[in-house]
Image (cartoon, rainbow, N blue to C red; front, side):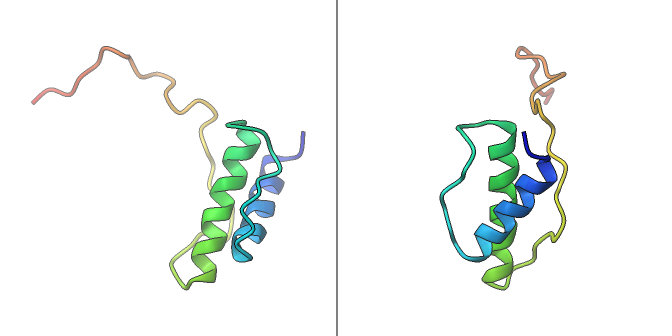
Length: 73
């Protein structure tokens, strides 16, 4: 498994060239990092604000959240 920072950098470079084919499968952690890098690279290419270094992604974005929890209003 490649380093996640490397996946992000690969995606960033692909985004700068608008290459859309992710080399990682499905919704794997590697694919998520690649797509995040792709979005940043594409933003750079079109002149929008972007991050030039990887943004840390939570491997389990819904951890610690109760399915039954609701916001009090």
